[in-house]
Length: 419
Image (cartoon, rainbow, N blue to C red):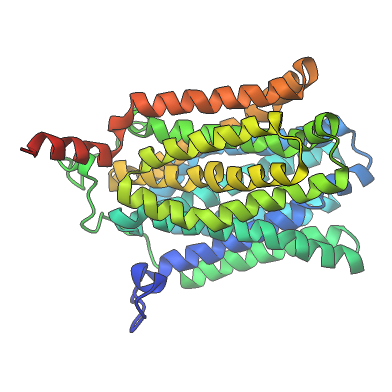
């Protein structure tokens, strides 16, 4: 089957002619649509089922633990069975787990199911990212991953709207069934539409590893981590930040800024708009000027926006800060994914994506625990300052290891050759 669109206009389609990449975008949109449907009503549903607040929070931790535990094994599974097969199976597993969730008899069964959710989710993420990075051209990787992030964000935006329509006419449990149905649709569409995996790098050997033959044996997880450590730090910081601000920023705004509950519900919309509006631009800038350099700049601006929540008092100004934070900090995620794809040899992509997702899940797991403890013992301002400190450490780290970005190496060689 041909993997290129014929007679496509000079546009985004012509820049990404591989149909499989667009099919991945469709699959991740459907999966994220399912996430958005469920997450918008999950806490309310569990509260109506009589679960304690601590139990509701722990279910999120079990989901993250499933991601952590299966991130590395997924890399082995992909090498054994292919990214395409792993993705199809993981989508089907998620469809089953989310469909049966509202019908489970009690908390222990819910814990097991949420753990399975996390395991299947990371299977989809690693498989999708492996397929994208293996098929994307080297000078377009951040552009490709930024569109991947946009497709995912669109699912999170549309999902709550779909959920609102469902729960207005049907019992809440049918929202879970709807989420499982769209995930099953993604699995079937991937089975029908996706071509077999690319088995060798199509002439896009990363400059940092140009001396390594495409047939070289797979590197160890430690060697892979050393190569992608800046991307790992970036995705850990973003996962930590994202998982911390979702539950605690609204509480901070209500307690310290006098913002109403109704106003805090709108806050995430601005974050999403910022991400959707700037992710593709960030991808283009990263491909052109260097991924790590761009991540450093985005982190500087995003860190200033976090500080803004401490000193800003007007609601409109805080909404603006959230918008810019979404455009900067959220855009770091796809750019860091592109960087680890650029510096990783083709045969190590599945292992690299697995290690990368371990750090993302680790941030999601630790963020709410540490931020919650700081919030409870030191207050909301201290919680925000510790997020500022974390991003500041990343900025320093990105300066120390600036040479990890092939773009910096090219600039250094160009400077050395200049008269």
